Image 1 (cartoon, helix red, strand yellow):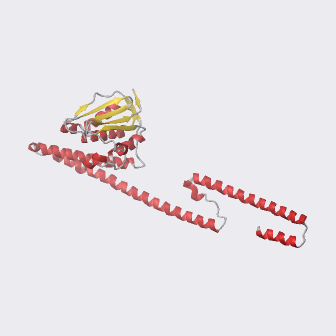
Image 2: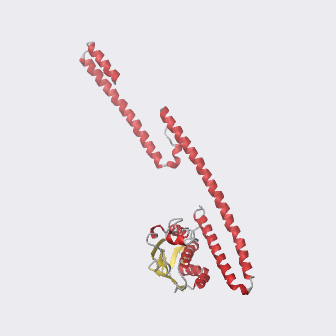
Image 3: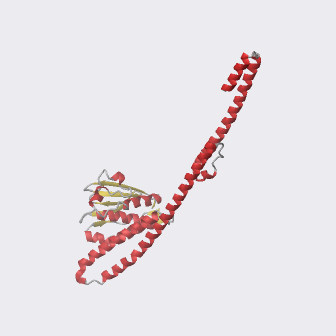
Length: 310
């Protein structure tokens, strides 16, 4: 533009007619407008193309616009380099996770063999050591619980988790969980209040049973001898209520976070902060809800929202 302006000044100083200078100015302005519009259209097309790519980031590397100058070419090379580096790192992480999952899956199944053997050995212990036998049985039960939790944790984070969502009798699922913890009820002298449930729920029997088992385990763990646990339906919610030590108000908002143990967990070295996290994840995937109401030194009430049919 400066060159053209200087050219018009030179033309004026050389006594070129104003009409010719004006015509030249109009011609230059017209050409500038045409060039500007062409550049704007190309700019708009490139912006629209980039916006489409941003909406489909999975395939963006194959749809990058052709570089029009050296700077764009350099940016394209940087993006391609970062993309391939990220893809390789992701592949390494996936492979590492796969190897770890396979190892722990094998470990969990292998450890079941010595556990079963220990159960057989306990049955052969002399009757005079009845108390010791009961203590060993309880310790073995705890080991089995931790193994089951580890296996469930691996399954819930895998891509092959199997769900069988059908109409199930809630009573059967609850009673199976109660039977599993019956010896713990007896040992801790905790009273169970359960009169049966007639409702049907659209759910997965295995995974809902795991959740109920975890909630019963927590209730038994934090309820003192002589206390009680009550299981009943309240509208469309399965309620597990205990008279345990309760949960502090500050802990309730974070109770479902992975690894969070809260005040009670700090006082109980066996607490891992995984149980309630798994319950939340499983129930969410089953389209169920879970809510906790609790008061320290009074008890805790856990409500599982189910898709219930009478």
